[in-house]
Length: 260
Image (cartoon, rainbow, N blue to C red; front, side, top):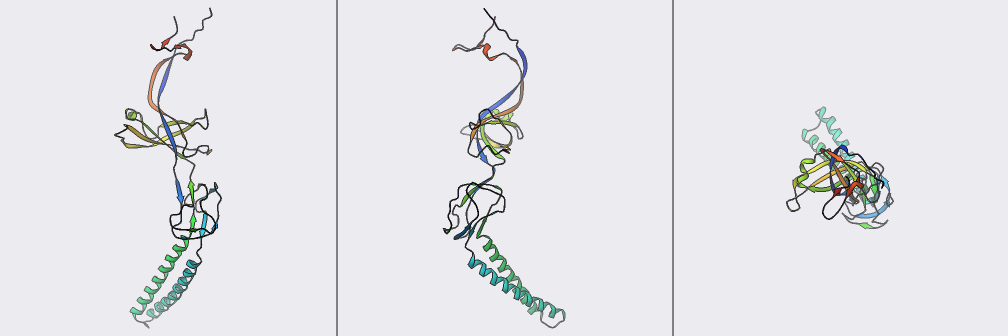
């Protein structure tokens, strides 16, 4: 009879907390117009990566631009009149009240021009941050009302991992703690991260603590909405005796070590 033996080893075992986590985008938004108008130009494609400030869509702003041009012309006339009154006042050739009226008219005209310029700017939709666009939801020539969904924008690096653990594990959790994430899409691959926030309260119904970790996702292999297994590396360490897995005998009456 051939008998195989293996020595028992003393190891320092690190306790790990296990949970199921969901991946969430740190920044994601559905872009929509603030003002109503007809779509005259679309500058993006579905799934495209765009940088912050990139113009994505243009609404018809011909009327607003004409109004802005008229207001700027009025502001320029008022500026000239104000400058003239300023020079006359310096020579005591005009009343202070005339100078004040000219100054007020110029400031009002300038403010109206700035207000209309803001309206013109709102006729364009810009990317508020760098990220990947979703599927385009509007077409050229379509009339949009405020709040109409145009396209989603999502930042993929980094990503949040949302998970929950029983309240008895609270003493083993802290901000900055390392986690390991595994997702079904990449079997055998581990993604490293760290806890960035802990909910200050325990859910009174489930008795669970909500934790939020962050993973860099530099290769952009992960996507918001994925789920995976999370292992939180605890601070607690135990000295244990380690034996090969095949040395264990499992039964309904308990597990035993095979040996003499």
